[in-house]
Length: 305
Image (cartoon, rainbow, N blue to C red; front, side, top):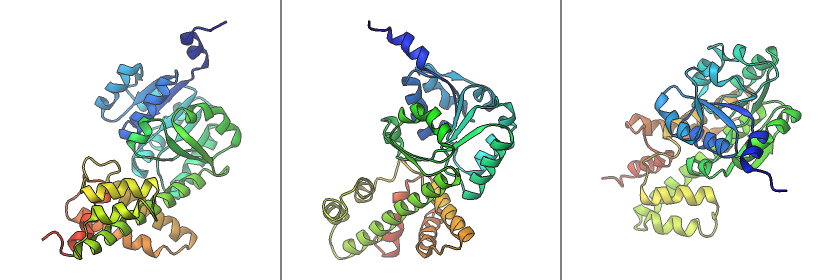
């Protein structure tokens, strides 16, 4: 007997809150709605909730109202936003004991540990689940999600993560493990962009276009999605709109350096990358993709004259 699909969705669905509706958060929340869950959303700028409301989401007036459910997801920009919205607002005290908070934000290792302790003190389950993928990947439900926390908590929310991803990558029970993996991965992406930016400046100075050089490299030695995607942006000098804004890249490289300091792990290239990102910001380029590191390399080589 074929069951009514609407009834089936209602039986399978969970009551979910989602806080933080930037390009990534909005795309992720939309996939949870499409999977049949009851989703209540909140964002500091209320206008960001309107497209999700049209898909069937409920809109909360406060973050605490969004947290009244089985699972709360959050996708906030940085440590300060997470601290203000999650820790300092009283939101955790408003959640029911036994509820799960799945934090997708890229935060420092130090804050990750603090968050885990704050949840445990209140009888709340906590899962760190930062993601790899740009907004278009999130919209397609093809993120790779790095997770760390109790195995039984992961299993409870696995259907939610699967609705947003093509891969779930457990890293152990200590939540900060997922965050350091995310930080290290973003450092690798930034290093790849910096190397392509400098190499393309070198070939351009000798008369070979960035498109020809990077086209060769990303079709042969570096034929991987990360290199191919960012090489295309560099070759076309298409730095707006930002898929991953340069200030976020700067933030993440600084998180890598802080994590390195805490564990006495030298990261000499991270210091070079931080300075290149800072040089871009100092030039007033705040609303560009971090592939705009290519502009710094070109400027240093005198190619923008």
